[in-house]
Amino acid sequence: EDQVTQSPEALRLQEGESSSLNCSYTVSGLRGLFWYRQDPGKGPEFLFTLYSAGEEKEKERLKATLTKKESFLHITAPKPEDSATYLCAVQAGSEKLVFGKGTKLTVNP
Amino acid sequence: GAVVSQHPSRVICKSGTSVKIECRSLDFQATTMFWYRQFPKQSLMLMATSNEGSKATYEQGVEKDKFLINHASLTLSTLTVTSAHPEDSSFYICSARPGAASYEQYFGPGTRLTVT
Image 1 (tube, chains in turn blue, cyan):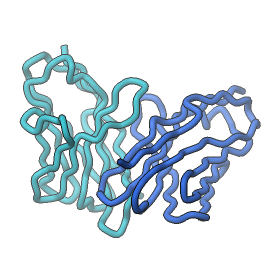
Image 2 (cartoon, one colour):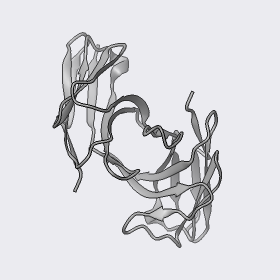
Image 3 (cartoon, chains in turn cyan, blue):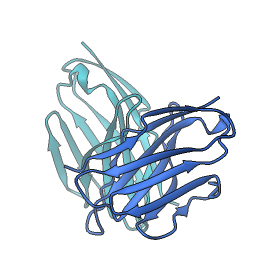
Image 4 (tube, chains in turn yellow, red):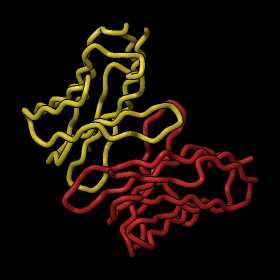
């Protein structure tokens, strides 16, 4: 069974304090790993897709990396507006995405 | 690009009535749309997958006669919650996939359903 585990469940950072979120996965035949950002009361916002180990993608203060077993979302010098829940999802053989439970990030000014 | 809308954003209905939620892909054609449910402080739970012109595929434990899904066009899918009960109160989110060549799903803003 495909599984996605995100850690930590919650993370509090000071503004400017860089850190990383982890997404470990167990799937057979990874087609893609996705990162989303979700603000309270809203739908997830697409951030990145990673397809193969070694791939990296960046967007502003965010950088996503992928290995054969996990993905990291690195946040460099975060700002309060980066506060959100970050969701990781994988797609294997079917059309379905399997989501992790998310990491709730709080960035204090 | 890749914008998905949902209507309504919030709805309150009485127990026993039916509610329809619309999901539209605004700037792309979606061969596949998905419906999710999200409980407070939990991740998304897939309810069903729908392909344009075909019957929806429901996840185990989701009642297809209660949650009616129609995907009549490449830009519109609807979810109808029939004979709603308070336990159906939740946050419903749809997503759309642009095509077979793309694996990304783009999500709508969600619909908060409250059944009184």
